[in-house]
Length: 187
Image (tube, rainbow, N blue to C red; front, top):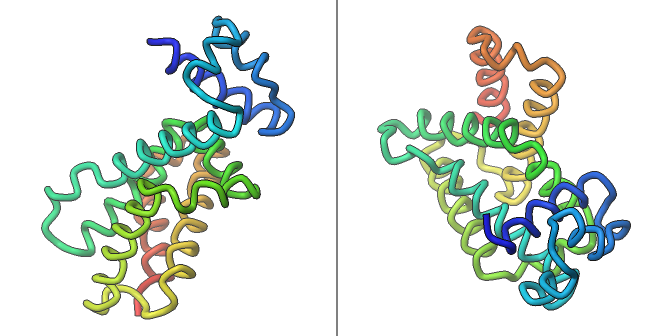
C-alpha cells in the first residue's frame, strides 16, 4: 500500500472514531506511520484530505452498487441488485460506510456537492430511478426525496444486520426485507 493510501485508511479510521474536527492531521500521519510533511505532499489541507477521502469512498461505493447490473435483464431485478449491493458493501466496509454517513451529516458535505464526480454519480442514479418511475416500477414522487428515502431504508438494513449479523445469511429474512423495501417504493 502506498503512503497516500495509508493516509486515507488512517484518516477513515480516525475520523470515524474521533470525528472530523477532533482529528488533527498529526494523528493521521502518526496512525499511517508517515511524517506530517508527507500528508501535506498529498493533500493541501485537512479539508482537502477530507474531501478527497469522501470522493474516493463514494466512487468505490457507487461502483460496487452497480457491480453486475448489466448481467440482470429485468428492471425489478436491477433494482433489487442495487438494493442488495448497497447494504452488502456497507456491511463489508463498515468504517468507510460510517465515514460516508458521518460526512453526509456535516456542513462539510456542502463542499463536495459540486464535485464533478459526485454530480455525475447522482445524475446517473437519478436517471436510473427516473426510468423506473417512467416505467411505473416505483412511485412518482420528488426524485430527491425518493432517493433519500431509498438510502434511509438501506441504512436501516445496515443497522439491523450489524446488530444481527446471522440474519445476513437468512434468506427468509432477506426476502421479507426486500418485500418491505419494494412495497415502500412501488406505485
